[in-house]
Length: 588
Image (cartoon, rainbow, N blue to C red; front, side, top):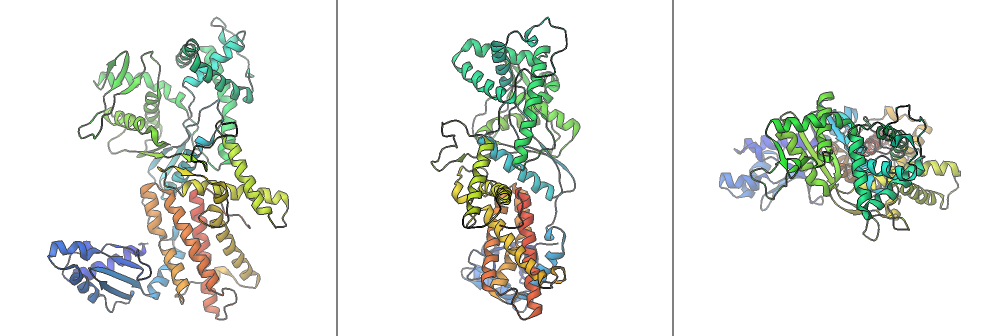
């Protein structure tokens, strides 16, 4: 189903051609002056250069050819050459009828089942998720849902940090505390204990202690680096400890991600890339792409036309250990072997852009990915508190993600309980659903690359540009539909009719923008476009609601038309919320 703008452009293009001009100038956009028109075409301005003719003269010629076209209520050229367009009620009504019956509301789907891998976890094992993990998880989950909606086969990978220095730090600290454990005896040949020598809470205390000590004690840091390398090289006792760490950490990470409504298809880590790294490095050396530099193995990535200098990419450190770059390259080899994707999408803090530029270029230069494979990096900004600095605990530490979620749920719970009689358990359950919408919409409504302030009071509000407001709008529509059916009506029997008021026309116009909006969100991997759309749609519905007597309308045909229209509105809001990663509650 063609979008409404595509249909308008087709008609305008014919008018350009009939007037003797190229139809390529018939580009139509939503009007930036809705008080004057619904859509506009500025093609006459561009055409004037080719045809050496005043823009308003070209515009007048085009408008004249559309004077009696049934698709439009009016088409007018205004100086210096803007073509202002208002659709006929019939065209708009017919489009919304078709949209209501179409799969995915008429969105033209670009995907054909091609595989796309989204790398959007990045959590480190042995460390609890904190506020810094929020954006990658929330944006990545929405991007995965958006691409799946466009009928790509999406594979989300948590890509755990399970192979780096933190492992060596934990092993070293544990050795200091419990040197008698068999894991540290290189001559031990028996079976290692099945029970880990630490609990989750102990593990979460061990790492920060070790990390702080390594910054102050060079010998301790050197021991941790040695333990890291020995673990990577396969030392038996260290690998057993590594497995204990994984067995304890993974269930907790899965639980916390699940509480955020984030789900991965793969729970692989940097360790899964380890078998490929030596062969990768050897292959790049053999091809003459990698070379030795100060004891390390590097690949020069600078390219002609670069506007700034790019340092070489280190793929093996001077001590022989793997690093982030070699791990990411090995991960691509694994993914190419098992999934053969046409596209990769990585999400991380925008300050890591150099890292992604480096290993993307090595992947292409070394033929690790197939020609034509897309490698995309979505770099996101920082989420800050009201004071403009990153969220912290009262003690100044990094705020754990589960505590942040609880804080939001508590704020929502208090709003629910204000002046209302509701069962406490029901209110708590509702607070989880609304709280998740507050978190996700609050984050996703901002363009990913921008820093933003998470204002708990504002984002948990049931009014304004918030997730709870969009949820509330859908719940309000559901309540109207429920009363309609309670009065003996049947929503499925209702059909959309030609609009008969300004507010009804506005609601149809807002709905008709869905296909263009989704296309833009898919093309740009931009959840914020969906947020802006459902906020505008919610506002437009609420204007219609206040202007229209829906259930008390005496004209039965009009009444059923209203019901069909608001039913479609709810479905569209609900679909958008699903793409953003949250649900509509039954009541609010």
